[in-house]
Image 1 (cartoon, rainbow, N blue to C red):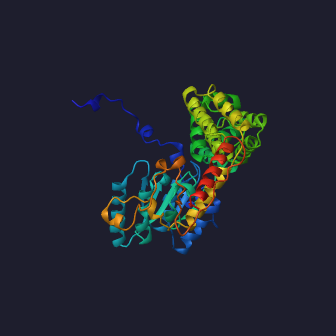
Image 2: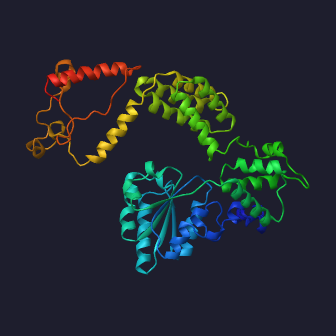
Image 3: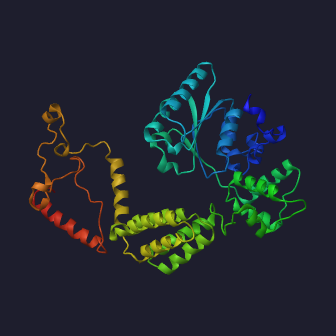
Length: 438
């Protein structure tokens, strides 16, 4: 006898009831809220469709702003086949299958819009695999990412795709979504005006989140019950932030925190850190920013700064909130009171620029290994001096490409630990001159 006979019977209307956010998904680009610069009557995407020509694109923006929905609607309004994959769950084999399907479809005269969610999670080789099918028109790639494409995507991929920025929802567009939800449910949200404004802030610019919160409110409300702001917090177990983490308040406070640390003012730094904790900021975001300050503004003036910040992050992971916040506060004070140096930061930017300008130059042959007879015959490794066998464990050789000549990127100041580093560099420079290394 089948076990299905003993399974509870679920009413059909309940089984078919989808989440509110899914039921209210826009059916046309004109229905999309919060992205009028892209989907409005004069928006970029509407202009592309009108021209009859779509190119590959990267959709960059926070969660819940409609990136997936817009990609799907775009394919429909442009008459393209729609394929969707996620970089989290897909590998090379999945990509090959999608590309082959798109090739066959193209032979039948129809082009494919390939939507790749979380595209920044693909490694360099996987990102490179898109290039041939983008160039020959097999697919129009639309990648979605919450991370800055300039840092997370290959330059070759970016050169073939246009980056379109999705903005976090503002209060007006979130309010419009709530109005649509009320129309769909044929009933108002049982909230006071203050509670409604608080619910909008809780969503933090995320359209999906505001609809999910609205569903929670309707589920919790008894007949004729209306929630005020305090009751709303108890019902949804989420606190409204003092500022919108996706808007100016967030950026203003993190800027103030960073500049207070850079300015060696621990009291101001603690004040801004406490304000962000109180606003409900993600402590691990603050931990990441402290790590950034350690490498950008302290650097090798105090190498322990980076160690302290990583330890604080681990301590927060271990203790959680609120106990772990003290570890981040300790790291914040350490950074503010540490000697400051941006010498490594400046040196890395200069070295990066030099790498772009001289990226085709080969290293000098004397520092290259010669694993084959042919390479040895070509002079690879000739003249290399093993530094540990030299006086002072220093040979003074020139390691830059011959056509480039020696460059100086790192210039440590006479502060903190970098004072000792400068002494070493000056000593090695003296030996290099004496030993003919330049």
